[in-house]
Length: 341
Image (cartoon, rainbow, N blue to C red):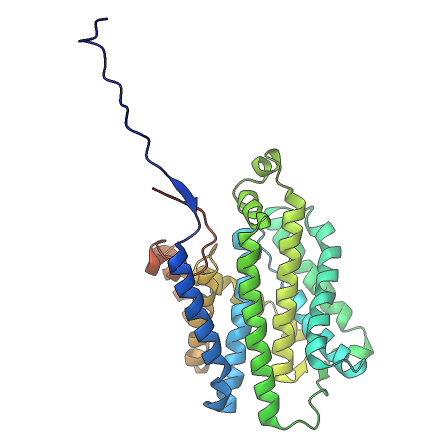
């Protein structure tokens, strides 16, 4: 072939690409905004009523529950309907450690979460032998077993429950403010901890495990280790939320603290907010909290309305409200890799 008819060869350099997680300037701006929001929330007890503070503690617990369940199902691919087990253990454990053992309340909350981790570690060897729907049912069975065991101990109040005595002698204003600040601190730790976990190598492995477990194992991902870390972290988060719920109500009882309604709320929060994102459960918790406060007087119609809202969002916005609003172009907590030119 002559030079005149030979095909032209391009000498242009290939386009440069890079893999990144969000924009640096945008990340700094959101970090500053997040700090400002937390500082603003810290002074809320000085400007609102005690009843409103109690309601806000409920919002914080919803954020914790939604975030940890999303970590379990949205990132770990494990759909559990038995997280109420650790909510109950967190509440009962806090009361027992604080009142019976005389440990300071804040430390009791932490120790109760540790107890949840220990129980979850033992339970993981059973439930990890199950997959899919069997895993979900297995977690529910474990929750019911723990509930029944709780009612067998007189030190835990049997079937009637316990009342918190750690706040005895503390005025109501100081008590409510203390619970609020503790709830705010725990919420910040849980959300930030989830973000840091998903930014780590464990988080990257979780994404691979969720998408295809066998393929992840074939490329060297330690599947059982990653799933167990997430399961234990979710149990600790549920235990912290259970402790906050209990000290906010000043009482624990088997039927209320081990109620499967908590897991139903977690699923609703994650679905309407956006599964597989850190921002989604926060948005979902706010929406659920508003609906809960506005529709509580409707009785059974309240659950009907929640069901309709969930169905509509699933049909019209499969990625949740956060995905619908941002179209995947905005990440307050960038954990997903993106290829940029």
